[in-house]
Image (cartoon, rainbow, N blue to C red; front, side):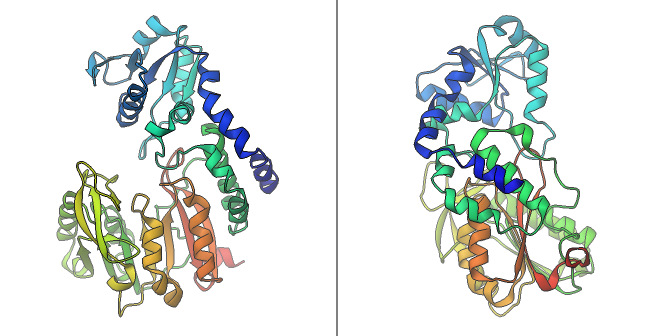
Length: 394
């Protein structure tokens, strides 16, 4: 039973977990030197964090960048790294990203086949050096999850169907144990547009929070051309916003006329926020300025849709989802739109977001669906019962 498994996962005491998480990497590595398997953004993050603690890895191993150096560290092919370090280093897999089919098991099997006898995923390393490496998306110290055991258990009771409850337990287990193998593969329906969960009307009024380069707009124009009345597409990053505008400009005039693009961030109040403007899907806002950020205007969802009645709201805004929801509380309580909210950007969003929404309305049915591998693009769907698909009503 999923609930029994969840209770067992949460049975450890936070104090004991704090000791265990600090020592887990040493247990897995046996005190060996480190090779970082994966010379992408996560590998560079791990390298910088290790160097802050005076730890220098031996090398990167990478399937595509070998023969170079990165941040002063040699990049070897996995074969070359294995020949030199297979039995004297721990290979830490630092490959974990959205929109790729890779799973930890692929790298583990490759390295084991090459004779590497100590292979682990990156979370245990991050738990050892949390001040330099955490939080990182949903990755955070397991003890912090156990500190909120009561809320995590309450979160289990929110979900409408067995698939959601099983996914919830797997996601909790992933956050606690770095159990990559226990995660399911993505569902097949397009992200945010779960026809098996809710019914579309012919006059949808849509908010696209985190419109990026128009990827969601493209799906709407291709799949639901005649099914929406209006789209409010919101994107604060200037590079992404220019791409969004180009995407909309290329659409047929009848569709283009339904889409309103605004270069603005969403927040709990009208204020200035600070954006790490990467020109990618990972551009994220913060309440504090730091090196490389730019100031952006934030508005509340309530103010942006004043006088309208949104029927569907999508939020994928890199960890600012709770703030955006708070800024749209009046709209949600008044109009009960279908909500598709990403819950993978922070550890606690998995349970905090559905619990928050349930406080505001008691007529939502909640579903949890993965749209990418290894925890990425995990979406909480909140569907008014009046709009559930016929399949869900049976």
